[in-house]
Amino acid sequence: MDINIIRDAKGASQQTANQDNLPYAGVRASHQMARTDLERMRRYKDRIVDVGNEYNVDPALIAGIISRESRAGNALNNGWGDYGKAWGLMQVDVTPNGGRHTPRGSFDSKAHLQQGTEILVGFIGLIGKKFGSWNQAQRLKGGIAAYNMGDGNVHSYENVDANTTGKDYSNDVVARAQFYSANLF
Image (tube, rainbow, N blue to C red; front, side, top):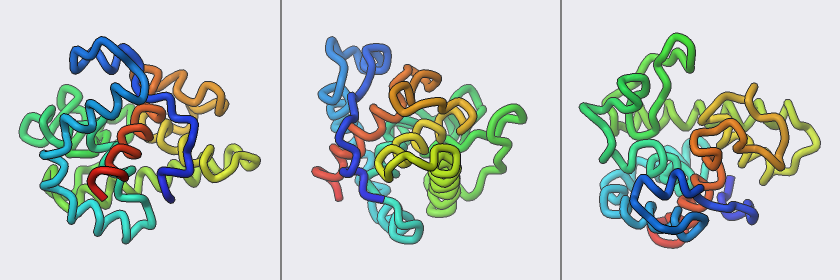
């Protein structure tokens, strides 16, 4: 699953870019936020590569999710984020009305990255079944959006992020991942 097969990523919305006080949005904003997280991301590079190879997922995609979800750990409080509703670098949802996952490993462990990647791969598969006519790039982007909001909230490719946080989740994650593909992996 090479992240570079997706060629239509629009990047971060202004709402997301505002988190870093950026006066611009789009791919440029996503790249800047990924650049801000780059040194922290380097700490996890070997584990990310191992998990990516294990699950046949581009390590840059895992890094893009980590950057978006936890700012490479910088936004976590003792491993927790989202007001205690999500665990670890990839922010695995533990809420009863959400993912209902039991956290695996420490917040930055290989076990945690495996769990988050398993969830992602599962969503990519569900999107592929739901939208059988979508090509590989569309299924990948749809699965990334579903990682944020569930596959039941993905209704079309044209509006894949309509129900995601910031209404830009997959577009932002893909742009961050493409930055990491060029600058870390």
